[in-house]
Image 1 (cartoon, helix red, strand yellow):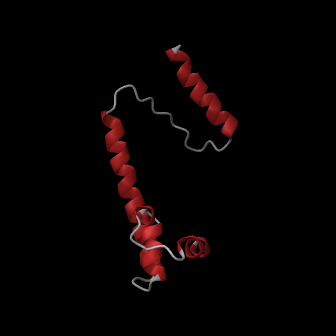
Image 2 (tube, one colour; image 1 turned 45 degrees about the vertical axis):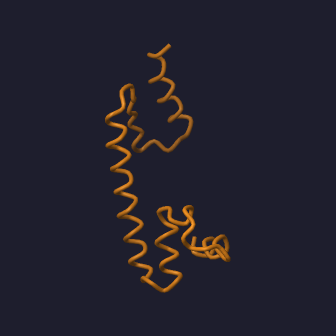
Length: 91
């Protein structure tokens, strides 16, 4: 990932909105020598959790959301079956 970021961000100003996304911002700080890699990784994890919490809070307020538990299902066809089964009630 670091190689990809070095290549993609080379020549661009680090304050571009796209480079403020979770992951880019922290790894760019590491590449600039502002923080150590372990700190960058910890920040990515923390900011990802916080973002997921904000999304979950937002979705809880939305009516008509159908939550599907696909924990432990890794087969795309089985996931699709679960989705299609849930949607049958809306026809």
